[in-house]
Length: 553
Ligand SMILES: Cc1cc2nc3c(=O)[nH]c(=O)nc-3n(C[C@H](O)[C@H](O)[C@H](O)COP(=O)(O)OP(=O)(O)OC[C@H]3O[C@@H](n4cnc5c(N)ncnc54)[C@H](O)[C@@H]3O)c2cc1C
Image (tube, rainbow, N blue to C red; front, side, top):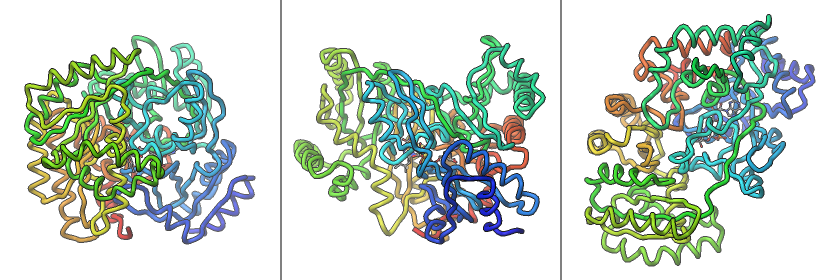
């Protein structure tokens, strides 16, 4: 095999304008994302523009005959929890240069993938507009990774996930050429199919695959409100409208089909007023029933976290200074004082945050109050109405930061995201949740539970000594039991965090062989030589993933 230096030289001679970095400290840093895994790249590149992405893919194709292991892993902010943004060959970091907002107006924006969500939001809010699909990692993640994973968050209950806000993606495909993906009418599709080039071939093959397997594919769509597993084939081609939209496929494809260089988003005007009912539950037995009751009132968001998260938040209180600054920390401290009375009576097992939005403060207050009255028969530990959301933000901060807190502050054990993103249709939750707890207990896992209750999307993140073979041996059987339980209720193994290395090997369990083979065929149409992000999604194997469990923390 030729050397990576030769490849880097080749890249430069193609006119690559960005940097190429093979320093050991750089490679160490890029060996990890927020997942359980580690893969050490050979080199990291920082492209400057779409033309650089084309040069990169062209050079990989040129060197492939002598260096068959060359491949490309896209990486925006690297917060992926499924191992999607690490790779053993070339990692492409979009955050250094390809991080610009090209255009923003009242209901739309065009942005490069490496722009951090928090920076993007600052700009869109100047126009009173919002991309309402930000994840809990909103302070860390970039918009490219939100598209790559099909991210969702607290507002997804009302607005859906990132894919619903993507109007167009400018991508570089495996032949090294750039293309605009957007919804096509039937006539436009037919014109594309008539082209005698790689693009024409993709449209011909994809249309045939979707047409030949139309009913199977439509029936395979998971019956949950959120899904980030597999390839989103069911939303690409609609016979009744005649619309053919490859953006639907690219969103959530984790860089396995090509590189995204520019994103055109649709934005919304957020409702001006919001308020929250905070519910403290000491006994979680009625949780399933309560979820169903809350959903009847159509809240804008419905989030929750458990007692362990709450205890950690209290214990590592100063941590929040970094997120909030001193002023925010003092405000947080003062606002937590009244809750100390509740906490003194015993730490609640679960804190629920139910948010309502409306056009006027009065409407908000009425919605919050009426839910409180509705929940009173459950004799819950306490409920706090907050019709301005001024008080409830402290709990929101805890919810959003819960996983981050665990990652950064618990040193003897590590967060092990492997059952971290399950989704079960809410009506089944009263039955499902106690069974889930049984499994957690059976494997003696210390697990925090937080998530998006309204979608039945739970983040269960055990704390483990993953480098210890005893703890590691729990992964496969615990995952099997939890996954089978989720699937037995018609759920999905991932609502937001995607397949990557952790759930890729379970795709056949979830979808069966026929549909998984259609996923594999899709990958082959776009990327016949497997140059994009190997060992993820359809190309993942449990053996490979398990042999790359993180050793250094
Ligand atoms: C504390 C914490 C909380 C989280 N909470 C949530 C949550 O609430 N909801 C949620 O959805 N996720 C959550 N996540 C997971 C993750 O943060 C999100 O999915 C986020 O959107 C990923 O963004 P990123 O920029 O870090 O992506 P990365 O990790 O860089 O990439 C994610 C995937 O997208 C691909 N990708 C990145 N850029 C490109 C590109 N330009 N072209 C093609 N493919 C690309 C990568 O290859 C990878 O497969 C959380 C993670 C952490 C650490």
